[in-house]
Length: 483
Image (tube, rainbow, N blue to C red; front, top):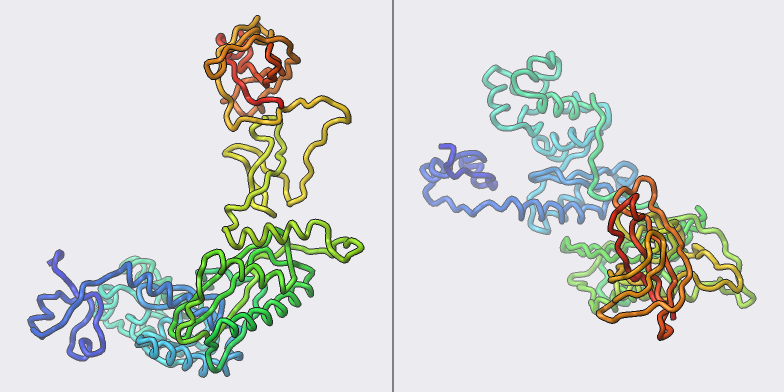
């Protein structure tokens, strides 16, 4: 029987006929031969639940899934925006019904209490601190425990939550496991818990709600313009600028379209924000699928940073703003990961002295490499006036091995073969010694030489490893070319 097909869920008609989840398919068909069944799809159910959770963010940013069939919303401080808790609950149930979902909903002071009430007392609204009284008459199964646990408790006469609430916890935990005790204490408000929201609430949000959905791109554009002005006013009040932005468009049929853009510098300019979204849509060659219309449009600043007033030129512009706008437009159209800048790094190791990072970000050039200097305007080290260049104009991504003949232990290469061509050394400067960090045991000391062959070509060559101390066979490489 353990391998038998079983019912994983039943609709209202099946439940009225006496069928229930967990019953074997053979027994169910013995009772009702005409029973219609479809194969369970747990992955599809989970994906649908996640989409419903995102759709539920129209009421609050803090939404979590409650597998296998529930979502939880933290509506603290937001219910008054929808006419109160009762009106908010009714609105949610009505919208779900319009989407084809049969929903039960309740509101309580803890997520677990609300879920328990939704399972067995649809429509209940319980104030914080009243959970024990409201949950007492409900069946133990409403806590969401496994069916075998609820059946086991029923066999010993413990059918309602109040039968468990005043009894010692240890015997229940020993016989039925700690999950039962944890669910009970959480539902009664004896332990504090959070809903574990899928997405963090953004620091700044501006939104518009429409009694009649908007149906044209022009309406969306005008709404976006008003939202950028509101968002920038909030940012200015707190002296910050937005780096990451998200435009969420909630369609009346439950679909949610999210468009994210980023800025290379903190900004609180409405026109610049609107431009980023226009470039994003143009780059994707994507038309807004308005469908039956959007009834909620929300603009969020996903990340923000301190933005002090910058010094302006005589023409009123801030130095570097033209470049920043270009970078933002390219990033929105092509994708932020495709727009890069080269930033200096705090390292003497040549290949780690710079990193390719996104504008406005910091990072590292490779695993184990030092962090790039923070900010888009990090300064590069400047050579001394009139000093000869000690680094090649062209640095190879990876040093290329050569065959070299040199005097040991510290002499320069007298001749070397690179890319199957033999070069005779006519002049050289060096060595310049670069030693690895004390914690980097995989690297060897390098002695760099600036060499010139008889044809006038200049190379940056190094010997890897100190002869007799680090290795008995030092190797030679070309790392770059001068001119």
